Image (cartoon, rainbow, N blue to C red):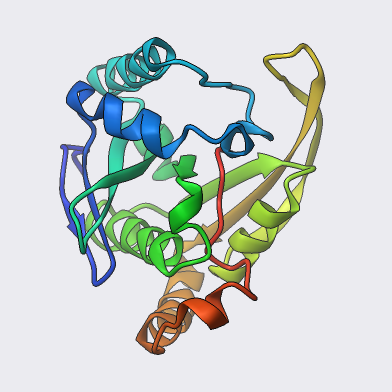
Amino acid sequence: MGLEPVILEGQYVRLVPLELSHAEALFEAGADPEVWRYSCLKIATLEQMRAYLAGALDEQSRGVSLPFTTCDKSTGRPIGTTRYGSIAMEHKRLEIGWTFIGPAWQRTPINTEAKYLMFRHAFEVLGVNRVELKTNALNFRSRNAMLRVGAKEEGTLRSHMVNGDGTIRDTVYFSVISGEWPGVKAALEEKLARPWEKSAARSRAADAESMT
């Protein structure tokens, strides 16, 4: 159950090991302040993005995270980040989060497919029993996205985190457990098999996600 860097690839998205060299492209993808609206972290400069990536790679070196750069497969362009975090392999448990996707790629199949690839790797390769997800209680778009990929809402931790501006955040937790994975997998595969049209996608929030 080693957590070595790995490439996860689908029809729309390619998740590659995070590198510091991705900083400029990721800063451009996350330049809209709305991306960070519900996050404890606010990235407003390239230096802050570099520091954020360095922190993620430090966590990877300590075995508590495995960060990815999210790339648009059609262009190879870095468009966001995500990671396995809060890793507790002794309990066969990890979290999927620290996710942002540039606004131009939100409300496309990219987030759904990224979650599918990460769930599949977690359950079928790493052998975990539980995958957690969490988001700001006020981030209803992210909450709906987590429900739409098949996660179950578990509850709200009140006054759970402090935002960068000093305000207090409630956090909603979701999860998928191993016994649920076959059904979640089938539903995600059915969604991803549908033809995707931008006009239809704009009416849905299933694949939109900002930093959680």
